[in-house]
Amino acid sequence: MKKVLFVNENAGRARKGKELDNLLAEAAKQPDLEVHIIEKGENLPWLVKNYLRRDVKIIGVAGGDGTINSIASCLVNTGIPLVVVPFGTLNHFARDIGVSANPVEALGLFAGTEATEIRIDVGEVNGNYFLNNSSIGIYPRLVKQREKYEARLGKLFAYLLAGWNVFRRPHLLHVKLEINGKKQDLKVGLLFFSNNRINMTPLQAGQRARLDDQVFDVYMVKAATFFELFRVAASFLRNKLEQSPLVTQAEVCEAVVYTSRHHLPVAFDGETRSLSSPLEYKIHPAALLVRVPPEKVEKNIDATNAETNQNRAEQTGVS
Image 1 (tube, rainbow, N blue to C red):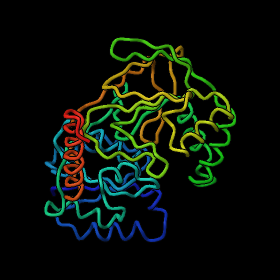
Image 2 (image 1 turned 180 degrees about the horizontal axis):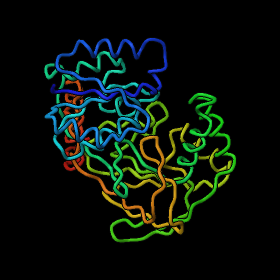
Image 3 (image 1 turned 30 degrees about the vertical axis):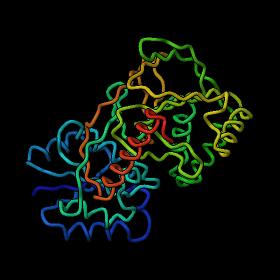
Image 4 (image 1 turned 90 degrees about the horizontal axis):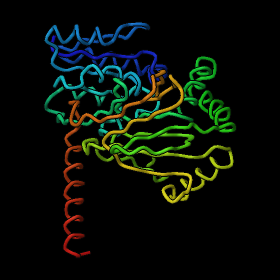
């Protein structure tokens, strides 16, 4: 056995109709592929290490961003390729690496003839890896509220109710942000770290064109009232977010966040954990090997060439 697929049967799409049955049936057709259904309370790091001792060459995961994070975190700097099968509700990471939204099609990435391997950056905060983003402030509160209601209302309605509870009573968090050896005193409603540059235009919000530029895209949102949050939302919808006096953006390779609280909730990849202050953010370049469709690599090459040509034109004064 050379390959294993971890499956979260409680992921968003697993609960819809026969999608789980179809996925398992297609996985059974893959040669040398073992399927492991994740059970509640299982020690995933131990399981992954155990499979690696058995000389597994490829590890896949079918689930949402949180499940993908749990498996991917075990593969950082191992050189073992990860296959992502989008099986959650939003599937941000799968979208950004160009994986098909069809889980059955994504299974084809286990076959070397249908995939290309690339290395991507991984973010870290206090020993916790993240593939998409990490934040403190409003969003962790939103996630905790959503988890409170999700079992009873489902994810969509849980998000709506949680959003109402959080956004009508936002509050500022006093932090000291250290970047390049310099500290800034800030009061923020949200401090958001994206693993690589994130698109914040209304139609493509949250998308990332590349995951190998070795930077955090940081957004500091100072909104402390419902009205101020409304102003930020209006700026976003008019595609003028970075012009808002309530929003500051920066690109950094590492940062330290100090707070007066000894512990605070921190979100990463849709999950929350209580971490100790200070929060030390750093990026690990090319730390994770993932399998992607060949066309994703071609798009990255085209984007790199376009950026290089633009830089040359700016340097020579040609427009």
